[in-house]
Image 1: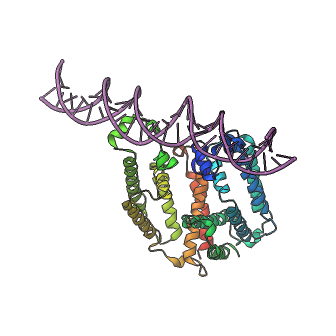
Image 2: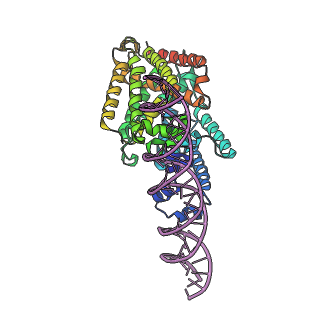
Image 3: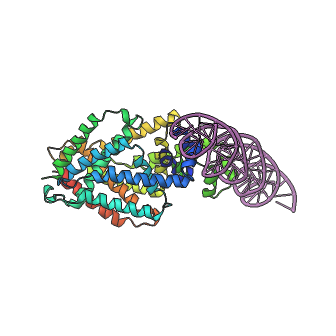
Amino acid sequence: MEEFAANGYEKASTNQIVKNAGIGKGMLFYYFQNKKELYNYLVDYCLDVTTTEFINRMDTSEPDFIERLKYIARIKTDYHLKHPNVLNFLGSVFINEGGLPDNFKKRHAEIMMLGNSKLYDNIDTSLFGNDIDTEKAFKLIQWSMEGYQNELIARLKSQSLATVNFDPYWDEFYDYIEVLKTVYYK
Amino acid sequence: MEEFAANGYEKASTNQIVKNAGIGKGMLFYYFQNKKELYNYLVDYCLDVTTTEFINRMDTSEPDFIERLKYIARIKTDYHLKHPNVLNFLGSVFINEGGLPDNFKKRHAEIMMLGNSKLYDNIDTSLFGNDIDTEKAFKLIQWSMEGYQNELIARLKSQSLATVNFDPYWDEFYDYIEVLKTVYYK
DNA sequence: AACAGATTAGACCAGGGTGGTCAATAGGTG
DNA sequence: CACCTATTGACCACCCTGGTCTAATCTGTT
């Protein structure tokens, strides 16, 4: 996944893959008929993992939009730490031109749909200030949180994520969240 | 720039470069001694363009932070349309491990410093709600706007940017900006 | 027209990386 | 021992790499 994510399908090298995986070249082509089959297997695996360990853990019982996003951020971090390359790989798959089979596109669309309903279903819009367009507020709040997460990733780029103590960053994140509540909520 | 941005220095192909540029192979190595010299020339050129056509056009006379960002978004769009690959290329340069000379790092740091002062100098913080941490609000507002811009880029990915009429997107952007003003300002 | 110098193209090169094959072997089980 | 699966890495033909070089063409001057 690392190699494909970094270089895309064509430029990913099977030699690099076996080297970094610490296995012999033969093993790769013993278990997979060719490069494309490996790639498809990985896409399939990643979609599964994303569904079961990320999307399905989202919870529509929390009606406070910001609290729900806060919880999702927790899940996402767990998921990222447990499967460090899955999100990067999936991202690269859907960015690069659609050279992947239709059934993957269909599953992708389904997952996005499911994710959206997990995000927006059963939200209590009455928490928001009266003169606020809540649809736009949803977006702005999401972008705000993504912004923090992206900046954090950039800040920690050099370090190995597994060794980082995230507690202070969660504190900082929650501070930002308090600001969001102050401004968007009544 | 397109080729380097897409593949990084090592994996960028001089053959692809000359093909896409519509010139013969000989020309490249007539004007540049080798691949590295071309790369360094491009970095130099992009830093120049970014300074003169982006950073220097930012304006610290507007004390309203959101209005200032609004104007910067305009400048950035102009700049992006005029030099479509410069930002992508520079982004890839600074993401990939620091294989570039020290004087480039120094210039990069200087430009970032200049950009920061163009962003934050002379801002009237009294516009913000009284119970708001303005430092955090600055960040949140920036992330919100970046979020819109990123989503727009994703939405328009397939189309050639030169042919798009941006007016409706500006309207939409300004709608989001009005929400930001409503929530963050007194 | 004749010449000169600046431009330009692309065939060509050795070297290295490509996806994929295959004979050899290691390891476990009976 | 035999048998089967798991595993390795040398090896292959092929293609692409950065870079060279010759020869052609353009441009301007006399």
